[in-house]
Each structure stands twice: as structure tokens, then as C-alpha cells.
Image (cartoon, rainbow, N blue to C red; front, side):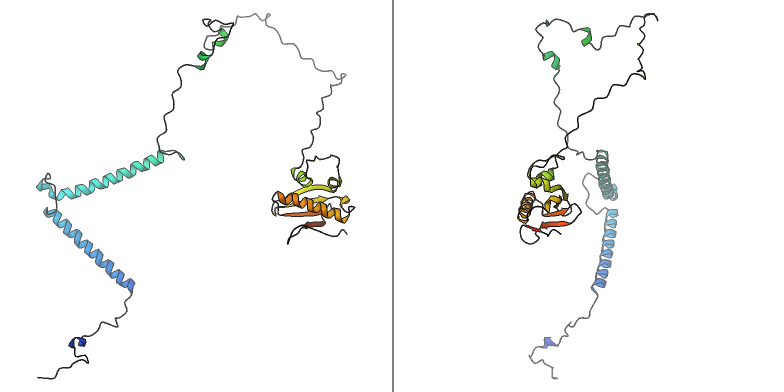
Length: 282
């Protein structure tokens, strides 16, 4: 007996070649091959169904005649397609006919109005009897009587309008009293009271502040100060600035700037910390 090659373990099954390492194959090419195989399988199955339908070997209801067996499934598919198309057309028509912004939900029925008019429920006046018929003026549907014909001499001519002579002076037109100016809400906020334009200042605070404008972009308030600001002591200027900043900050503003009539910056709210920082007056 010839000698047989044996593996180190003594098992002859180890002589079979291993599939590894497997060669690389592009997965997209594999997918394309699988798709072609699927298409071919579907074509074969459709051919089989078509052949079986022609032979009459597919399932048929008992009421369908056997001579017309090849026509059953085409008729079923055609009817299903017609139902789907008709349903889609109906839904499209309903959506296009409904006005924009109006739902297709049924509207609630409106309550019918009372047949009796509200006039019939009104009580009769003390001087009128319930059976008294309405006057001719309250009957709009009654035909109007034609006016009697008048001669031209009986028709009243309009009175001539007297033109004012040049010698007579025209009557002076009544002059309207000047309306008081409305108070500035931002200026009233700064001063802590309602003030009107042109009113005499009550204290140094009103004498110093000329105007208050809002800077919407920075959410800030700009106060324009007059020349009396430089005449106040330093402590009083600091106190007024702090008071204005507290009122403005309480209303939600994030910054306050003080400037002179010429545009010179006299002070501003502190960017770091609290309070007001005043600049030296030149």
C-alpha cells in the first residue's frame, strides 16, 4: 500500500484548500449584477404568469366562465387602476374648488331667526291704542301721492344772495386757542414728573435738562444738558446723574449718555460696575 500524506494532526480534511484570502470585488459592481439578476427573474416570473393566465391555470372564481379565463385578471387590474384614477381626480377637484383658508369640515347650522319682528314686542305708548294703525310716515311701502302742478307764477324763486361790498370789512374769523403741547414721555421719565414744553422750570433738575432722546439701536437714552450744568457743584452733578440713571435703568434701558448742546460727551453710565462716570468740564 502506498504511503499516504498525513497532516500533523492526522486529519486528512486539512488538505482542502481554504477560500481565503478571497479576491477583492467592487461592491457596486456586485450590486449591479444582483439588480440585473433580479430584473431577469421578474421578467421570467411575468412570462410565467402570462403563460398560466393564457392557459387558465390561475385561480378563478367559480362564477367566472372557463372560456373567458384569460380575461379575468386583466379585467380586475384594469378596474383597480380606474378606481385609483377616479379617486385621485375627485380629491384634486375638491381641493381646487375649496377656497383658500377654508377647511372642508361641515359648517354648523345657523339658528333660524324668530319670525316675529322686534317691533311687535315693543309695548304701546300710553297715548296710543293698540289698535291704532301706523301713520303714513311709518309706511315706507305706501305709494307717494304726486305733487300738485303749480303755475310758474306760483313757484317761489330763491332769494338772491347778498354779496359783501368792498367797503364793508369782513368779519374776523374766530381764532382757535393754542393747544397745549403734549408732554414728552421720555423727558418725563428722566425728570420723574410730567413736564410740558415751554413750561417754566421748577428746580435745578428741569433747568439743566434740555431734551431726552432714545437710541433704539443701543437701547440707550441720550440726555442733552444746558449751560447750567457746568454751574452746578460736582457733588450735585453726580447726584443728578445717578438719579437719572436709576430711573432709566428701572425702565429697561441699558445705557445712559450725557452730552452738551454742542455734542460734547459730559458723562455716561459705567460699562464695568454700577453708577455714572462724569467727564471733567473743559
